[in-house]
Image 1: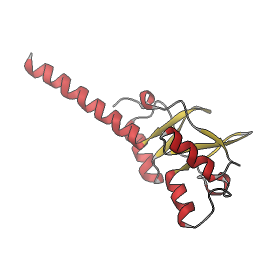
Image 2: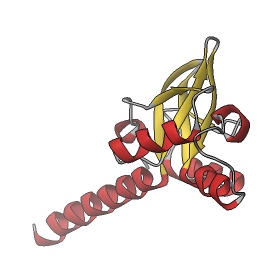
Image 3: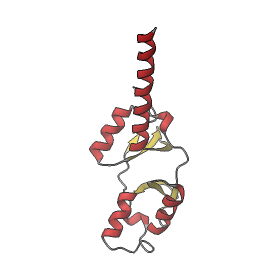
Image 4: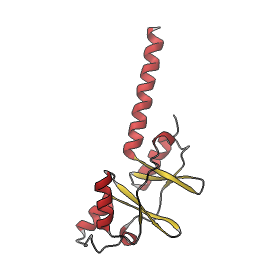
Length: 138
């Protein structure tokens, strides 16, 4: 199976960890995305997802005053652009997440979601069906 590099989203929404949950939600709605990557002057500090937003709402915290750094996921689950879909799915299953931050060694290069991996698997299956069809009909 191929690596995930074709599906790594490189135009990632970055947001300072001191911004509010409301700011993050606005970015996610505006860009039709399910997460933002939190940063500070030192670099990437975490990820804030739709699930985190639901937790804030369910706990009746005010999204306008709640800071990302207090509610984001800081145990960053990392993948490499050379990782396989299976490896990434295993990471997601083990860590109960739907987004992986992608690093090439120590350099942040993007993000990949469960939806991206599903699309990649579907493309690979369609390609295999095409190849088999050509083989059988030739």
